[in-house]
Length: 409
Ligand code: ADP
Ligand code: ASP
Ligand code: MG
Image (tube, rainbow, N blue to C red; front, side):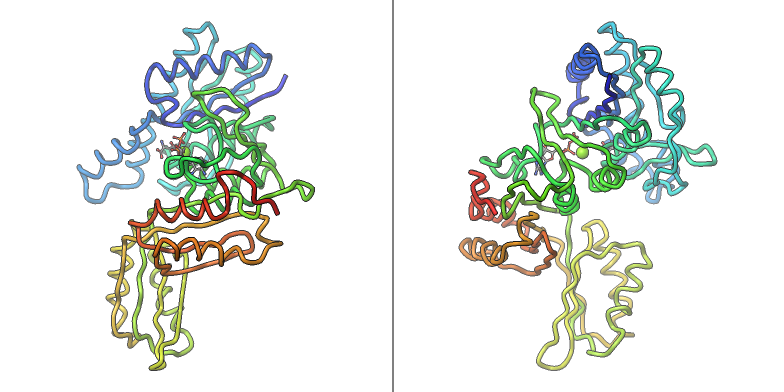
């Protein structure tokens, strides 16, 4: 008898009918002889709704209260899923984070897991009861409710899979696997049978919503087998696995895009040692994450220093830079929060030159200006104006023949 963790996302528990379908899926696996622990997200749109209620009421809601508020979404779906399973004659019991308990640090709204007590879950399984655990939440050492960051239920499921040494952690969502690009943008995107952890980590970190990057990292570090499947249609989904040198791989496995980007340029910075740290020090001090950085020396001997941040941090970052440009002797700060990042990812790139050129050719053919470029061993990212997102992703998808899956390394 194997233990599987099933995680159902917002759309998969988005209505009572959907929750009934989830129950059927769990019953089917139980009837096949396996144990199942279910981890649920809030019903689609619910966490956003709760978040805007908090923000409407208070211009600076305390993170502790936001956690109490946002965690309520998963409480509802966990209880409803347990009821739906009971209705199918399969005894189930819902658990909030503190009841398991899933212990985290006290970093409200972005807590990290510290430990998961497995006794109640194991006792339930031994008694033939299916535990339904609310994702995204935990409890800190002082007994306060915490949440682990938006989109965190994937990571909750992986952490539980790791704590219980489950055979497989199945992420059920509204697509039947990981595709060569977001199927909402590219009609002929192809489902991938297998994606390597290293590629999935890049794809997820570069914006592919289908798996949360922390979940992929956690699974890779703790050896949890991950599979992405549809909660709507049957199939094998996509297996996320460790790299196998014998497996034939395409040069490019997939394309990711991120729409929540913004760019800031400090213009006319004196070209002296220490400037990068003077600019980025206060940004880091405000807990703002910096992604791509480009610095180039102009003909007058000064430097233009450009970097990207998440769009939600744009105003704060701009304010910080406006406050320091005088001190560092720079001329101006200009910004653009209507940019997106498009990336190609694939382990096949390690052994293949010319990938960047093909990507840039595809963008040039569509008259799309590349504003920034960054590369690593298995990815190339470009920043472009947001209005070109769809055209860019489709043309890059085409240039690497990803619709036919024929570009093999
Ligand atoms: P859930 O609510 O189940 O967690 P998400 O909305 O977080 O679901 O993730 C699923 C969505 O991810 C899909 O609907 C799809 O539009 C998007 N997506 C982005 N990139 C990809 C990709 N490469 N493959 C599959 N889906 C992707
Ligand atoms: N409900 C939470 C969110 O929307 C967590 C999740 O769904 O993964 O961010
Ligand atoms: Mg998700």
